[in-house]
Image (cartoon, rainbow, N blue to C red; front, side, top):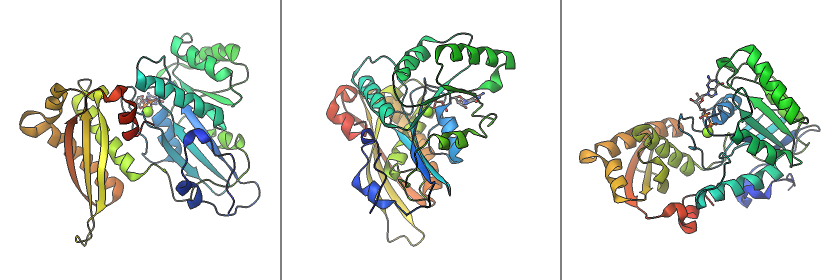
Length: 323
Ligand code: GDP
Ligand code: MG
């Protein structure tokens, strides 16, 4: 069996994934890995969803919701693009941030193309300069996407393009709106032109290789963010401990058990809420999304547990899918 030899090792693809794919393809088929990066909230997930035409990444107003790499896969007759929605890079303050930065850097070196997403501004922000400097030293080609152009005038977009052209001569600079789709029409084609010829990595029908468990965990995390705002979320990790189909139920029922880990008992109280109201609200919203995702009825059992200091404990981080 043949597979594309350039699977980036930083992605830790398992044998299972590699063996699953692979149909022989005609000459000229292109496939590769594309990392989407940029500061929190610039619209990376929105852009990913636009290109995939499916909701796979979480879109939220709050920064830093995409801690795990959520991959989306776009397969057409002539190409396959594997997108990596990487967490934001910024200077590391604690163990989990350091881990994310390391992971991001390892990934950048091994992908075929980087989409660096920024927002229009009068001058280059410090955060973008920091990322830009890192990217400039890589061999991997970079597209700089100036997103959210629907929010500013044409003049200021032009100004921004000039700023970046001066600073990063080798990059392709593309103004877009991930929200309206403006400017994004030719983007997929441009991306494909930068991928090597080779076999697909994944089966055609797979829009994401993220196991369903992990997607369900992300959905729960998303609901915690939505229901509690800034009160708790940074201290939250979600672990799906059981995921099974109930054979007794003829119409199909998936039983999912999940634990929300928090750092302090005060946070546990907030999450559970008065008479369990908050947890019920989170659970109901998550269950509805899971039912839509899985196309079956879902029975969701949600627990809250205090796991002290998990953000700085490598073992816990691994268990919760960060390593
Ligand atoms: P991420 O943190 O980089 O993944 O950013 P998200 O995709 O979650 O987007 C953050 C916020 O910006 C969301 O409220 C999006 O709806 C919004 N957004 C994303 N792209 C655009 C755009 O092109 N125009 C406008 N006006 N808003 C956008
Ligand atoms: Mg995101």
